[in-house]
Image 1 (cartoon, rainbow, N blue to C red):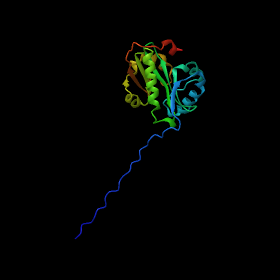
Image 2: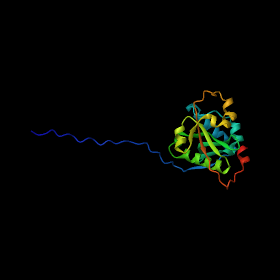
Image 3: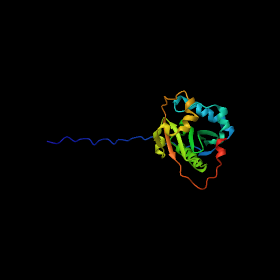
Image 4: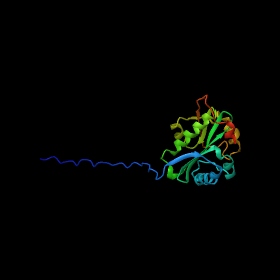
Length: 190
């Protein structure tokens, strides 16, 4: 009697989401006060995700030199601010990557740029408060207790409506000290 032939299992094809190469290259640059309205709109657009705190457009304009923006053509697709909390601690703030630019490495480039700016300005620590700590841990940050960043608590947390009920994680990275610091600290305090 012949043994029944088993059909070979069908090949399984897994479709993996690959980022689509942008039509135009994405470039990073320091923001100007003229970018404030666009940065503000980008932040407002992503407030519903629950990962950002609202910002006033006038405040953004006043601190525009602290922001780095990623542009594709003339469109701002991402932004992040390097905000000094003290003479030794700086924070990544208002870090937003538009949905269209996600998975293209833009966020990593922004954080790398802020890291370099913080290091050049002589800060000892770079921190962020985030709902997605894994992203920052992947970039070399460590999750730390909020109390390790009293500068943030004194500067922002006391006036926040989420104070003592914060769902964010504090992440921090120690910066290596270099002898070639060249960005005046006052330029970041604007």
